[in-house]
Length: 475
Image (cartoon, rainbow, N blue to C red):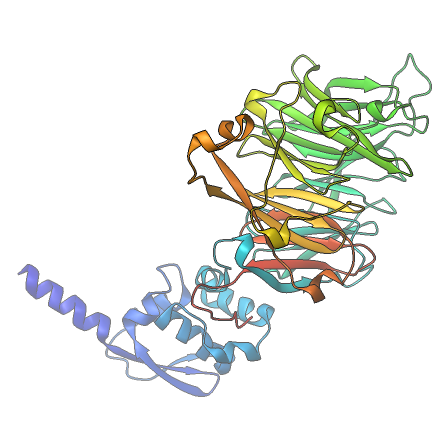
C-alpha cells in the first residue's frame, strides 16, 4: 500500500499544468510550481481541480515569468535575466511569492578577499558623494550622503531614503535592524533615526552642568554592543569623552575616558570597536603631520571606566625596535581577538593578541614573496578586519592579508613568531585601474560583500568573490 501511495504522489507531482501568463502559454509540472513553497501563489494555483483543463490565466509579464519559471526548474537564473533590472525581477518574484528563491540565486558566493572583484557601484540619486556608510550582516548597506541616509537591501536594491535634520553625516552605526545612530562633525549630538518609519526617535548630548565649556559636543565615532551604544564626543576646545547609551531607552548610562585633548595622546577616539568576547571597548586615534604620525590605542572596561591596556606612539610600546615607525591606522579583529596596526614609515603590518597584551605585544608579519616585501612609507591608509582577513588600503590600492597555517618547524621561528598559530600572506585584491580611481576612505564588510568608498568619488564600490565555476552574475 505504501508503494502504491508513493506512486500516486509521484504521478501527481509529474502531472502537467498549463498557464496563460499575459497571453503567452506555458506548460510545466505541478512539482515545479510547488517548488516555490507552500506559501507561494504558484503552489496555490497548482491545487486547482484536475478536471479543469483550461489554462490558468495570470495577468503578468510573460517574459519575466519565463525567467522565474526557469529559476524554479534549475535553482539558477537563465542568461535572459540580463534583460531585466533587479527591481523588475524582485517585484515579480514577490508577486508570485518566490522572492526567497530569487535572493538565493542572486546572492554572492562566500566572501574571500583573494577571489574578490569589483561587482557593482551603488550611487544614491542625490548628493552622490558618500560621507559614511554602515554595512549589514545580510549584505545590504546604509549610505550617508549629505544629510540623508539611503538604504540598499541584500540584493542591492534601493529600499528607501531618510532625510535627517543634519547638513552632513560623518558617522553612522546600525544599532538595531531598522535604527541608525548618526553623528556629524558640524552639528552637536548623537541622533537616532528609524529607517522603516523615516523618523527621528531620539538624541543624546554631552553636557556638564559644572563645566560650561562642555557645549556643542559633536560625535567622532560610534559602535554598539548588544545593550549599549558607545560614542566618542569632543567639544570645540578639544575636551572629549565616551558616552555609553542604553539602547532600551536611548538615555546616557555611563560616561568615561574624559580627557583634555590638548596632546596627541589625549585626542578624541576616531575609531571605536566593541569586543563582545571580552566585554572591552577598543578606541584609537591617529594624527599625521610634517613630523610623521602619532596616536594611541586603548582598551577600556566600560563597567569601571578604567583603561585595561594602552600604547602610545611614538614613545610607547616598540621603542626598542620600532621607535619612529608609528602606526598610521589601527583595527581590531573582533572574532580573532587581535589588534592590527599599519606602520607609517616601513609600511609593515603588525598584529597583537588581545588575550596576551604586554608592553610590546606586536608581531610584525613577514611577506615571503620577495616581489611584495617592500611596501614603503604610508600616507593615506585604512585597515579593516573581516572574516579572518585583514584588508589594507595604501592610497588607492587594496590588498588582503589571509591567514595560512604554519608548516615550518617551531624551532626555526623567532620567539615572537612561535607564539603565533599561523602567519598571514599578502595578496593584491584590485587591479591597477581599480587603484587609480581615488584614495580609499573607508572599508567595511557585510554579508558576503566588501564595501569601499573613495575620496571625492560618487557612490560605494561593492566587491564580491568570483564564483567557483567561473560564471558571471547575470545581474
